[in-house]
Image (cartoon, rainbow, N blue to C red; front, side, top):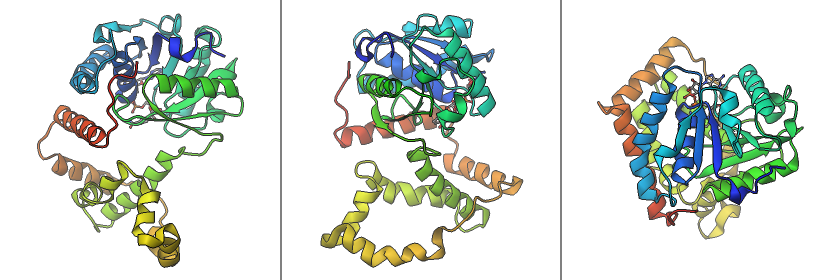
Length: 318
Ligand SMILES: NC(=O)c1ccc[n+]([C@@H]2O[C@H](COP(=O)([O-])OP(=O)(O)OC[C@H]3O[C@@H](n4cnc5c(N)ncnc54)[C@H](O)[C@@H]3O)[C@@H](O)[C@H]2O)c1
C-alpha cells in the first residue's frame, strides 16, 4: 500500500479547510506533522488560520508533540500542489455526493502512487464515492467528530473497491497520530456513532416541532443526565448497571417489553421554516449572548476537563 509506513509519515495534506478540515489541520499540526492545506474559497486561509489560533490553547493543554508548530502549515495554491508530496491525504469538502466523487477522483490522479486518501464524510459509503477514481483501492473513509483536534474517535471503513491494506494502513496511521480508531469491516449508513446521534437528533427535532420540549430542555436532559455517563462508559454498559445486580439480563427482562412502546417510532420530521426557526431561536437563547468563539473555547475546555477526569490525557503520542 502506501510507500510510507504509518509511523514514518511526516507530511499530511488536508483538502477542504472548513470546520472539519480546519480541525484536522489543527490536530495534525499539534501532533508535529507538516500540513499542506487546499480550499477553493477565497477567504479559506484567513478562516483556517483563525481556527488554528483558536484551537491552539486547548492543544497546548493536551501537550504538543516535539517540534509542533502552527507555522508548519502551508496553504497550497492548487489541489495538485497540495498533495504532490503528501504521505497521507484527508479530504473534508462539503457533503455532496457528486462533489466528493469528482474530488476524490482528482485527488487520486494527483497524489503520489499508493498514498492513502481518506474522506471525512459523515455518512456516504465509500462504494458510492469511489466510482470514478482510477485507483479506488486506496480510498477509505476516516470519519472524525467535531472538533477533530479534541474528540479522539475516527471511524475507518473501506468501500467495495478499497484494498484491505489501505483500511489497515489508515487505521494504524490514525492510531499513531493520536486518534482512537474503530475499524469497520462493512459499510453501514451513518457508520456507528452518527447512526446513534441521528436517532437522538430525530427525536429532538420532533419534540421541538411539536412544542413538547425546548432546545434548552433537550440539551439539559443530556448534559445533566445520560451524557455524564456516556463520556466514560457508553450507553450499553451503563444500561447493564441499570439492571442492578441482575445486569443486562434483568434489564432486558424488565424493560424489554417497553421496546414495543411507541416512544421511538417516529419518521424524520418535516424540516419546515417554523421548525428551522424554532431550532435557531432556541440555540440563540441557549447561547445567551456567548459568541461562536466563546462557545468553542468553552466546549474545548469542557472536553479537555472530561478527558483529564477520565484519565485519558497521557500527553503527546509522538
Ligand atoms: N461538521 C461536522 O460536525 C462534521 C463531523 C464529521 C464529518 N463531517 C464531514 O466533513 C466534511 C466537511 O464538513 P464541514 O462541516 O467541515 O463543512 P464546511 O462547510 O465547514 O467546510 C467545507 C469546506 O470545503 C470547501 N470546499 C468547497 N468546495 C470544495 C472542493 N471542491 N474541494 C475542496 N474543498 C471544497 C469549502 O470552501 C469549505 O471551506 C463533510 O463531508 C462532512 O460530512 C462534518
